[in-house]
Amino acid sequence: MQEKHWEKCLSLIKDKVNDQQYKTWFKPIELVEISSSTISLRVPSRFFYEWLEEHYLELIDESIKKVIGKNLKIEYVVSELKAHSKKSEIRNSPQKEIINETKFDNLNKNYRFKNFIPGKCNSVARAAGKRISKNPGDNPFNPLMIYGGVGLGKTHLIQSIGNKISKDNQKSVYYVTSEKFANQFIDSLRENKLKDFTKFYINVDCLIIDDVQFFKGKEKTQEVFFHIFNQLNLNNKQIILSADNSPLSLDGLEQRLISRFKSGLTVELEKPDYDTRLNILKAKIKNENIKISEEIVNYIAIQVDTNIRELEGVLISLLAHATITKKNIDLDLAKSIISKIVKDTNREINIAYIQEVVSKFFNISIDDMKDKARKKEIVIARQVAMYFSKDFTNNSLKSIGFHFGGRDHSTVIHAVQSVNDMIDTDNIFRKNVEEIKKRISI
Ligand code: ADP
Ligand code: MG
Image 1 (tube, rainbow, N blue to C red):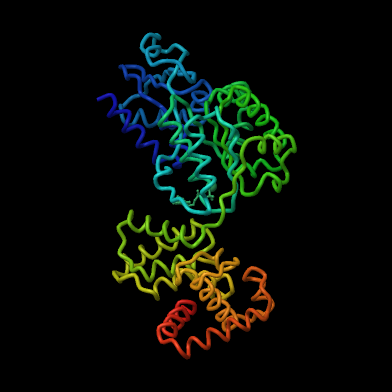
Image 2: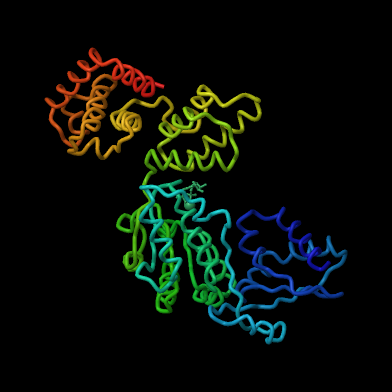
């Protein structure tokens, strides 16, 4: 009954705040009890409750009044964070006493390793993440710095690590964007709560800071973060960071901070390669239960090579259009949506694209195509890709050779001749070349 009341309050609150605020400031609250005059709530820290009081008191009051029908006095039970204290302490400690225990996290539960599709582009970062989630804090990868461009999976990966740590360990994990951290810091200064602010942070077991590039130019924030970082580090707490660029290229950040960032492991999340794009698409399609032909999935995977967010965007739009218009997802629809979402609409056919289509067709890797390998099927694939590079692009023979592992122009001439010869003499080969041509030009 009491729980029901509190749930109702929460659902009223949820409508009034954004998702992130809700997850950060309301999800961690636990109801202790509701009596005739008071409601008692358990919160993870003093800082947390002061934050609630300052920012959300009215909102909480208002929703309690709506649900219960009258104002209640709000009492907070503060659970200070201590990593290894035992559950029994909770029972033994008198209510409202400021001690102990409960671990908490503010993570998005949808970001998991199990839906983070592995691929060449993320293998090192993913492995490092899995590794540190086994022994958070106590490993050589501390801090772990994941960097890469937008939409490549940084937030997904660092939250997955946090979720795994939170699930498998008695540890508190706190996720925050650098922007939010900076805002909290400024507020805490204004309200004279700097001590609580730092206390909160140096007490978490695993701190995840997303997009540290936004610390740029914020000197005071960097200073306080430097202090928190050192404290956590000293106590073997795990720190996980993300940035849109390698630490070497993070300008506007203090050198001493950058050197701290580099003191553990720095890994890049790279742009997704074709196979990973295909696997991600397939996984999402399966998950959403979408009906979509293999041909179109391949087409999307080839065309949308920018980042994973755009890949998802195309899929969601396709699904939405197909649902609204009650039409099947066909190639025309896919084309028109891709041209709306992905910036370069009329994709220029370039050598990299041709290499991708051809290597996919012959089921070999692009690296092999550029490499010295002399295996017959690789040589043929390489020659076909050179042939189409000559046919479809304006690159000089020299430039084409350069894109295939630095070969010279005579190799390209020879490739074009051999492909022409084979087209004349080998029917199956000719059909294959036609099929590849079709794929390149859609
Ligand atoms: P970033 O933080 O680097 O900008 P996100 O983590 O927000 O990128 O990822 C963008 C979207 O792509 C998210 O919806 C995320 O779930 C998805 N995504 C990224 N990488 C993968 C992956 N390896 N497998 C499945 N989904 C992914
Ligand atoms: Mg992100």
